Length: 196
Image (tube, rainbow, N blue to C red):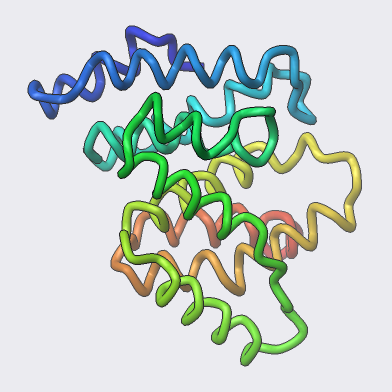
């Protein structure tokens, strides 16, 4: 997991004007908000949003997007409120965190390609800021990288199928070819390990 100074240094390396205080506040807030929560791997939960932020630093995204990634699960999984996020991190970050939270709540109906296509169109239409979708795609990528920690084979297959049907095509649609390829590879490894 990236340490606070490592994450900030990554952002400053490509954006020397980045708001270092914003990034530091978001990091500390996320660590405190998630507290002792654990992931299926046994890692502290806050390691996930930090890794999502790390993925987005590889894409050289702005400080508000990185802060959003760090905070993206706080409203959904902690006692943090949208008002608190807005007060501490500003309108843009609060709006994006809210957008990622809303996208996380959508239940994918994967029975047919048509349902997946409708969901992709909905996700694109719903997001008035492409950065929200980028955070959600990075979130899915990190979850796929750690999928093997989920004990239930049925749940792993469901997540992999959803990734293959919705998130990989969505990444392709917005021109994120490398992200799409990794999502497909990780999903295919779960769905068809022998063929892979």
